[in-house]
Image (cartoon, rainbow, N blue to C red; front, top):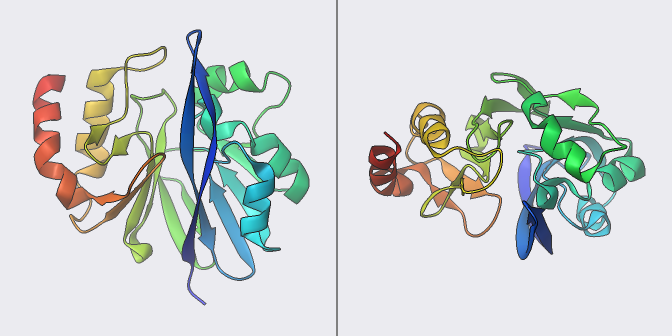
Length: 209
């Protein structure tokens, strides 16, 4: 059976630079009836476990280390034995949330993760966070963008560890080069496509330089 994409929304808070905000996060599960990976273990390990429905969890992939994307990762890892994978450039952010627990492995640009016979390629897309990554699954016609790209534009860059020109370069070099029909599955809010975002992104690209 080919890999499929399951989706749930969890709710909690995002905290950085002394502020805290209520947020809803997208949690993406990619796999088949026997095994899966979780992209961003946000807020509620029990809800994610329920969505896994007994499948073997092979990895917990962090698109970046803002607390709202990783707060449930250690509990989910403890319950399943799955490894937590994070780009090393986001270690400083990770330690703000989990100072006593380190990720189990590193993500690198171009690395390929395979689940249920489906390849997902890691795209390092810094800007929203230094270790931000996207996961491109050509066989599924989709890219999981975390907080790098949303419906309507790039992720926020107004807080610590972020940089607007950097996120603009990441989107131009790593995402706008994907086929226009590629579905963009984001860290928050609705999905979109590369083709739908490309015209709006030109304005952002112009502002970035």
